[in-house]
Image (cartoon, rainbow, N blue to C red):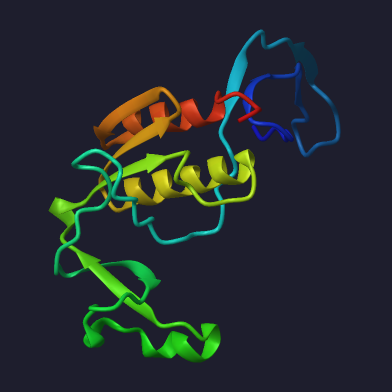
Length: 177
């Protein structure tokens, strides 16, 4: 059942009408209105895919993505002095006029911390949408990831229940920052 909504968070499910139009849709055999006295949680809409962030150095030890010269492609970031020339993504130079560097990591070493404060975006909803996208992508890549939303911290983990806890925290985050 699809229900459209324009807001995230806890939403009441409207009444549902169930009908049977058997056989061939010529006659209605019965119809019944069902009141669903339940709320559901609407997650933020995931934003367009972006590479995982480079986390600032002022976060505690273990924060961010552990960098190594692994085999798994992680994404792109801007070139910094000292980066290996063989990791430069030359094809992106004509499009963006900036040097982009390919980043790699080993899948078992990667642990991500997603923090609302350090998430780029013009407004709260966009930042929550970006966090939602990163959580979904981290789960697909089977990474260990944690979430920080202000004073609420969810320790790194992985799996369906961890993803649901993270997305529920995003959905129920207050509407004002």
